[in-house]
Length: 126
Image (cartoon, rainbow, N blue to C red):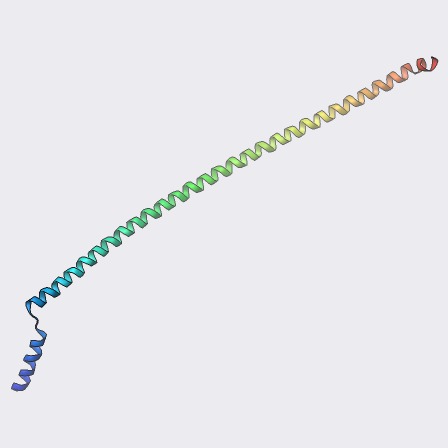
């Protein structure tokens, strides 16, 4: 190789070489970047844990809410069934009272008619 080519190579090589202080700066920058990445990774993991806890809490609350709604629905259906039974019992009692009243009225008419037949001759003689 010629001296000129070797000289150009030495200049290019010298341009590629950095001083120890520049190397320390680069290493410090890399250390800082790695440290920041580790901190960011730890924060991301903590956020994932928090999110997982929140999901668990949300699912637990949803399950509790669903159970409460189911219990309230069952209680409501039971109360409605009791009320329907009470209404039916009252209706039946009213029908029985009506039938008894009709029977009593029919008996009273029969008694009145019987009395009228028996005592009719006396009312005409007076």
